[in-house]
Image 1 (cartoon, rainbow, N blue to C red):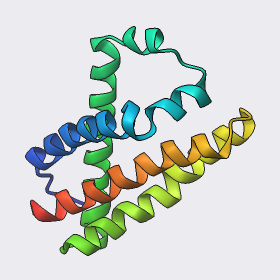
Image 2 (image 1 turned 135 degrees about the vertical axis):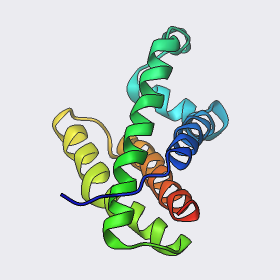
Image 3 (image 1 turned 180 degrees about the vertical axis):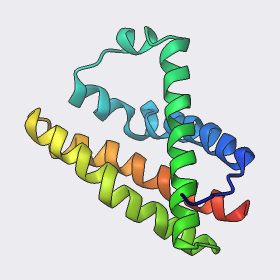
Length: 135
């Protein structure tokens, strides 16, 4: 089994960044209105998302950052560009395809996939850059 040195501070920064990015990405002034329309969610439903939902999202982001740290280490990425490209390939191979398959079978519009997959692309690319910055 290979050993990977994980910088847990970088993973924590990724978790915080994910929450901040999501706050902006899904805000009313960016993609929030159209996302709500496409998902059929109301403002009241969104207000009902409590601290448990936010905590689960944060923990998921931490796990994604932790796993991406392994990928970054395995490919030997050391520059910001290499970190971002590693994030891109993780997005293309796992997030983009999985989201697309789910949306395809659930009959969701391509525009919803674009919003959610776009968030994942930015999240994973920035995460890769954060990880190589903290090596």
